[in-house]
Length: 459
Image 1 (spheres, rainbow, N blue to C red):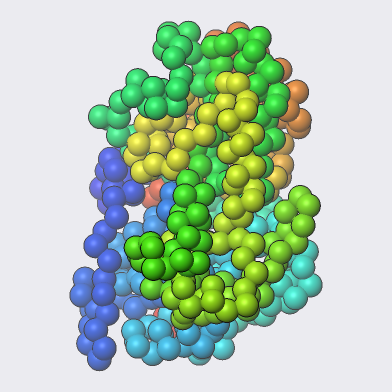
Image 2 (cartoon, rainbow, N blue to C red; image 1 turned 135 degrees about the vertical axis):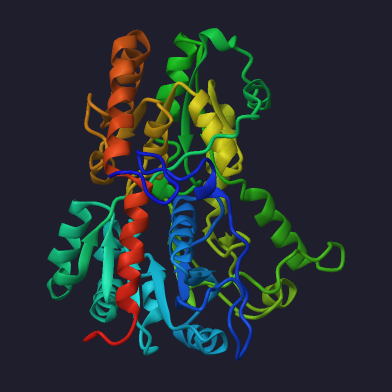
């Protein structure tokens, strides 16, 4: 695709523009939203917005595409709403004309029955996990029935959706994620290593970077034992896990809730809101139920009969503190493995660019933006051999795929000892991203599809 609209010939935006947040438009009852030019629509966009996650980055990028076309996009966290009735109130208060949801179940179900046109973007867990649960499967089929369009990141995702919901096969489009990276040029790599307690000389250092939330679907512990054993043999190799620091907030939340007099109020207006009145969360050994009490402050919520078995981040995303503690404890015991809190996107891109290789060990992925960003930043990729990763990583061409921890170590050793292989993977990966993950092509697609939300379906 050629250059257009302020992009370079590879279809990239000006440096940093895809990740520089715009001032968000605020609505006024009975009036226009500031920031619109009067020619676009008022759009509601629902997504899961935990900071620095793939869904949040994708949602912000798509919002940027839509606002560039003259629409005003109200981006909201799907976990901030318990029911479609709350969405109905928001639609009325904000004079919303159309909507978009990222994740067929989490966001899509909230858009049913409101009488406004909407489109859907598949997330990953909706097709990889929720699809196997009967009630969710039925709801997602209903969502697709009402949606005017649905976007899948890959052909395999499209094929899976068409197989499950044949009635929607004519409205599913494929648009891979558009990638644009903007590393912080002032980032201090040496300070980062010091913070991670890595004392090796940078000339002989090999840092393998795993970017993931501390969730079981991301399987952050999958490689820890094998990597720690390898580090004992070769002290110059380290694995750094970059994940959100949730434990501190959970602890503070519980303390403030159980003893509100001796703790300052937390900066939230009510208890964490869950997508359903009863939400089950399975860990390796147990299943817990949390009964939510919407619109109650933390102290009031915990004075009720509530079994507290998991909590939420500030944006409402569910957190499993048991698993979080397990990850932190195991990483602390493992030699050569470090856990670093999440960081701003431009800093994270700078870390990716400086590391030796990017690692993905997820059990399930829709399309990993971290993998594609590493390719764009000319960093080799080692990814677990699952369908979502295999859709973007061709083994020994654009990256390396492993099926177990032992194979990961073998491939990592091979990558270190074979500079020619490193160079070939990097060149092929960058070429692949520029060819198939154009930021401009993604913008064109979403700007075209959102126009189908204007007027009646027959127009």
